[in-house]
Length: 101
Image (cartoon, rainbow, N blue to C red; front, side):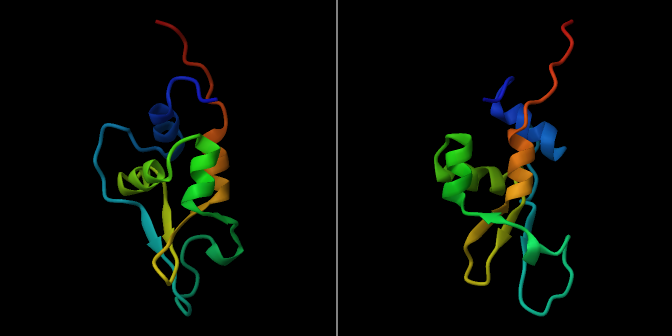
């Protein structure tokens, strides 16, 4: 799974230190807004449950990560949360080992 702990893996992949509190990187997409962040209409989106299954955590944990700004959350017009599959895949990639000492 993830070596060094999930917090470090999420922080390393997103560029956010895990000990900071930031506003959620939340992006809302609505029809007619135009190009807002790499054409989200072509991205494969995952539900909180699907993300939780991949990380082997509870869906509420995924929601907390998004609220802390560790995951970019996309809100559907109906208010549901979705996450980019590409970002989740990157977070699940093994991180290079840090040199000792």
